[in-house]
Image (cartoon, rainbow, N blue to C red; front, side, top):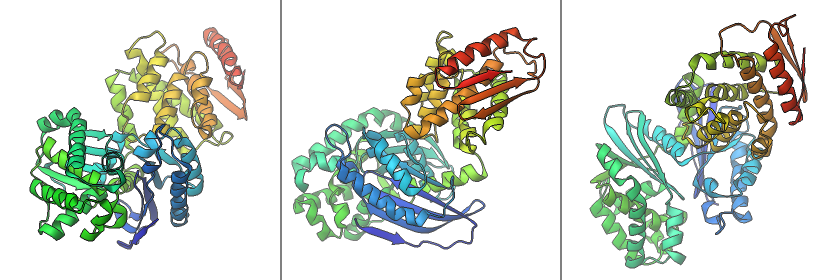
Length: 504
């Protein structure tokens, strides 16, 4: 591995934060000091890992590729050892999205780092990329197109000011395109033209929508765009990328004939191995989207992670907005949600110490209560199953794939039979958490089954491992025989999941 370190600035802030981008080609670590909402980057580390190159025909990561990644994370772990929980975000992108055995890598990597690794969707990656780029330009109302060519995917974002308007992620990247169209590093005009045509085919799905929305400024981010812009600057004395320069560069690549020889143009060895595919994708994007010129930004996904952490600490969690939008879209009964959420929060407080539930778990329970009835918009019959599907398959900003799967499992499990098969399909380290949160949500929903504003009266929940005791004020259950019957049935449901519920 080749390691690059750069100390960018030294801040006097009192909060250390970090973002880790586990890309298909390279892993990046950015460490910063946050003083309020001011951010000073103090360290950057980049390692070329080529995780995406380790995917076989069955979409499994090879042991060798995994080991390269874990060796890199061992280096990163030393640098982030003192960063507290919640102040570091490590995210996996296309290679880990595609890998069938990504859970194995995520578990091992999380243990090495001492922080969880999240696998994020392509559109969530695009949102974070735009956040990273947006903080590198002066705030104004001009509409921008941002393009980020990664190792296994390419993200396209149209945004205005600090906010993205249109997000898309396409399955083409410099690593995958180079491997597919430039075997053994050979570069010919025929191969290059084939790579451009294939990229144009991928772009067909977004071409019309993006052109119709329009933009005023085009910007490229990450390694491929920066490397191409650097070559154009050195060899053509231009401060931007345009169609003519791309064509010139393509001809120079073809004349050299081998990716290894790109080092003669000043390209770093690790970048030279994947740059032909990246150049073909960029040329295709210029043609499909009819771009005149593109400037480049040093902001990217890892800077977006840093800004996202600061947002969560000081302003708001973007995941709250994503949940609120889904509630509005499916006309959720806000009054019922508020009743259920208040009771779920009280139950959480009762058992959080015994069940080791932290603030992240509290947030997840809150989101699940807000979304537990979204399936009613599809059909009242089996609406918990419809709700699971909606929660699982919507693009929820800010959520990782694992977080969204847990959220969907809770929505599925809030009523009727306890969904052990759904819970057991979650990563092993989430199953106990899922069971505990699901129990709390089920009890809160059950206690408000009447959907009335009538107060519940005093109650308390005690927990000891897999045993629960729910106690009400004297005579309350006698005055609410339907609730008593519902709780008796719930005790039977929970017993099938290994939870003993006593009602008093």
